[in-house]
Amino acid sequence: MLTPLRRSGEPYMLSPTQLYESAMISAGGMTNRLDRPECAGLVERRPDPKDRRGKQIAITTGGKRAIDDLIGPMVAARRAIDLRADAVGAGDSQRPAQEIAHRPLGTLSSPAVTSPGVNGS
Image (tube, rainbow, N blue to C red; front, side):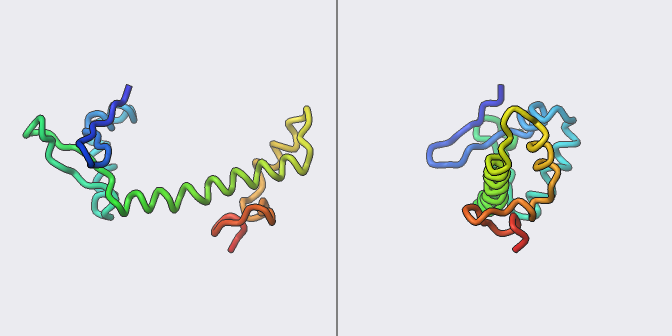
């Protein structure tokens, strides 16, 4: 199980080893996957206070903002799908739900659920 480390008042941090083991990729693969978000200012490598050879990966304020920017539209899209399924009346049949799942997100907007990127705006 992945156990994040936390210093008092600091964000959760994980070692690259914890990250690549949980993602089931190689150490080199994780290094490559961390380089881009680090260059973009989304995460940062910090020294591990318990192991001077080790590093900890911490999400930055910009990384948290990026996550929030992604999660909001995803939640809104899911709500739109759920509202459309209710309106279609999925009942016992999976057919309406399957039809909804394959529609472009822009077609799933509802007056009760609006979010940038979900209804094409």
